[in-house]
Length: 320
Image 1 (tube, rainbow, N blue to C red):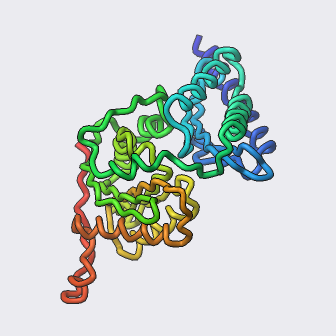
Image 2: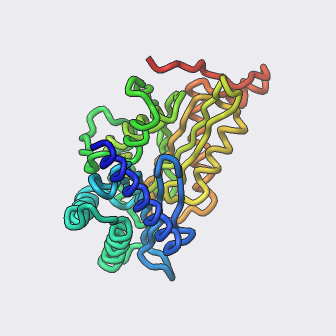
Image 3: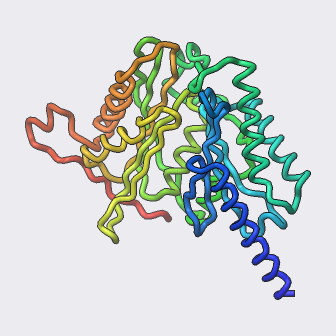
């Protein structure tokens, strides 16, 4: 019996290796290996290869018993995809798995997502960063106490799966602070901040924010974090553009030059229909810095000039 199980695992691993090699060959730079050992991958999918109009990122974890006995664990990241459309796409991927149970299905999934993007772009005529129904969001972005909670349509997201694989189950959700929104030419920016000491807490904060209906509806949710690892005397840091090209890297650079530790900052942007050009980066970083000052992670300009105060280094709290 044990030998049979071992043979099945070896067959699954070989099938995964062959499938990943084929996808890498087919999609080239669009295919990305995030963590080879943990079998985590992603692919950027466009509705039109010549002139991209809609894009989505399909992130995947391959369980050890895929494809013989389990489906891939996945998450679809697309700023414009939510509500009934997300449920519809999720259901169509599930149908593919059921129809092809026991087979390698990633190519079918990628092409189904691509078909979905083509259908969506043809029916709506939207651009790569389509306008959102931003007026309502701009009028109501400050709090989430009374907001309707959105159901999680994915049974197990990539972030949850990665947390289960690499983190314990005993980490606490850090407190999340919301800054004041800033509006320019109908685009609204709002920062959010949380103390974090592990990648698991970063994922928990993101999941918490996305339960807020307004934040989930933002055109972009840009974030960056820096965690100081005392045992290695080094930093664990990362960022995410969420469709706002280069914004995440600029936000992470801000955290670096301010030398803030053990904190993540998320900036939500609701696009108002008017292009802001470079001003959008200014608003993203300025509102993030304002919230960092308000929460004591960095001294204000006036305080720094008077006392030469250094940035605050929050003490790391070990998960219970």
